[in-house]
Length: 75
Length: 564
Image 1 (cartoon, rainbow over the protein chains, first blue to last red):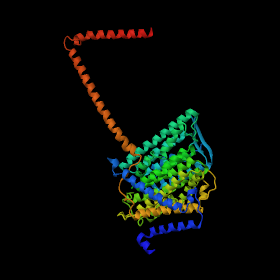
Image 2 (image 1 turned 90 degrees about the vertical axis):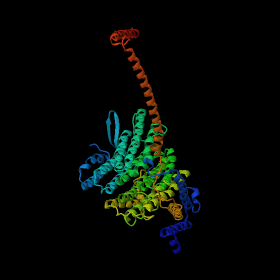
Image 3 (image 1 turned 60 degrees about the vertical axis):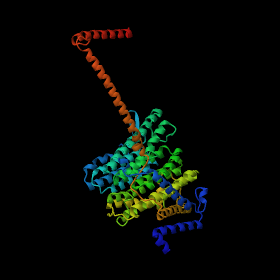
Image 4 (image 1 turned 120 degrees about the vertical axis):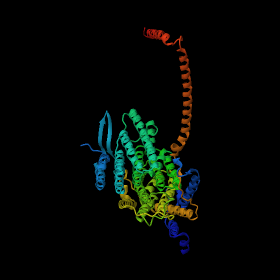
């Protein structure tokens, strides 16, 4: 625990613990979604994580295309 | 007695604002809003109608759809007045008062011509808030904003005139997208709702406005468009597709954008997408979702803009690359901004959650799986690019050298009120659902919704932490991110300027050619005027008489041939 806090900081460690707690909650109760795919175990967690990574990957690609100097329009 | 529409008194009353001393002015504005809100007690129905030149203008009508928008517009107007109370000059106060009044009056318009008048009034009054940014960039942005907004009004007017000529009246009602007038009106609303590729004005102009101006702007214009769509195009399927594109397309721009107020405008755009999707679905649950989301969005986005406005006011910058570590100087502002960000991210017990689940449930019930997952995808994204990024880079992240004071008291009061509203709606959704257009039973707080949403958000946050910790997250740089306004700011000038230069060159060459011909003719006649030639001064008199007689003869023959 202390190792985690030292390495990642308080906030990051608490987010990690929250993640684990919400996963455990799902095992205790029965979660069902609006669609059948969502009923897969830990679906929202997996979906949330990979959505975020996907958005970053696309954003980093777009960064090289769309990012210009600050005074781009002032010329 | 004629019942003036709500908002009208605010527009007329705004004319007195310049003549009042500062404190009295603030009280006067609050009183104006209260008087305007009193008109809402008249209940549903048609209240005011006038006939001019055989055309009926419905100035004031209200129904279950107008009421929630009218309430939130009044609440937002009050928050704007409180938030801007530190500004001593009258110009922005006058603009905000008349702008909010015009938007409220527009909601109560019963025909398209009345709507058009208020539609343009919102554009003309709000542009002063962008001018109030007082930079060269804001002047340019203000003019572009005005052109786009007035242009949208022209589409609306064209649609209204066509509708009038086809059906004999221009009632503001449900329209068919397959008719030409329907399409024109759709485009008019679409421009104001910042549809994909029509959204450039939004990100271009809002962040250039003054700190109090952006808060006011974020409330009215786009939400007025959402109201109009809900009233006129509910259940139009194409809106689902457009809305889905809106929810994810601006997301990537928001991540690479450096100006935090501009990040919020991209975020605003994605949230408009949620509402547009729900309107496209068109069921009672979905329309309730769209209206509810518009209301809470006004509150939490207003709150976020207030937080960033306060940062801008104190530090004179809103750039992620220049900010950081402000939490210790502005703790209350930071906490309020975080509440706005948490509401936006739709954490349970906060306002965003009770409205996003409404929309997602409506999509699930209709079996619109693709749209459902796209919105879920966007829900995860919004946490990152706005929910975490905005408060993180402003108040935490890297230590900057900026030192500042806490925000002025009036700003803090406005932010606290907005924060309380965000939390109250989240905790007591059943009271909030009562003001929505349709009375439905819906329970957002069940195990599946709550745990599903918490997992989605915490793991998205965890992904952000991983990316940040392992330094995959790209550094914040001072930059300009290209958006659809690039089309009219760079591409069109890039094409049209060379063409215009080419036409100018051709024109000059043609001019020179004719000049040459004229000189040639002049020389020729000059030669004929020397002594003993046809146009010699003495001989010329006789020649002229002969020519004149000949012309009269020709005219005579011409007239004779035609008429006799």
